[in-house]
Length: 132
Image (tube, rainbow, N blue to C red; front, top):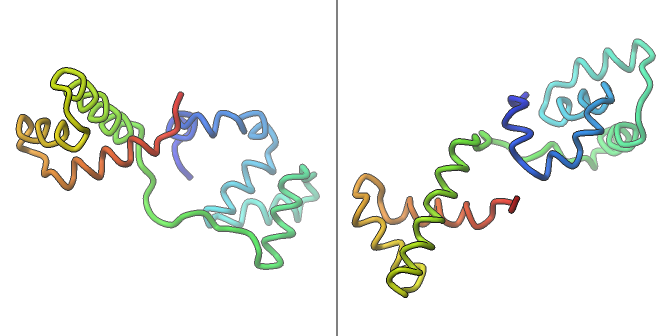
């Protein structure tokens, strides 16, 4: 399971923070990530289920539930680096009155450790990041 600090860094996840007080909801999140035994044990021991967990469990048993996106999740420091790049590019745009693409090229010239394609990918991720 991901670190709680990383989980709460995402503003979307803060919206469901109240639900995390239910032990079965937290177990459901773990089951969605592939750790199913704790939820199974909780159900065997007669634990109560909140409506969200009950609904997800029924969908899972029917084969309709999503297991989430595979692969590693981005850390808060990675998100921060993407957002720092986005702010730097915006500053260059404002200062030089150029397009975003040209501003990114200027930034890459002053930061030769990062390739243009990598910087462009980072900028795209920053645009997708939820606003605070």
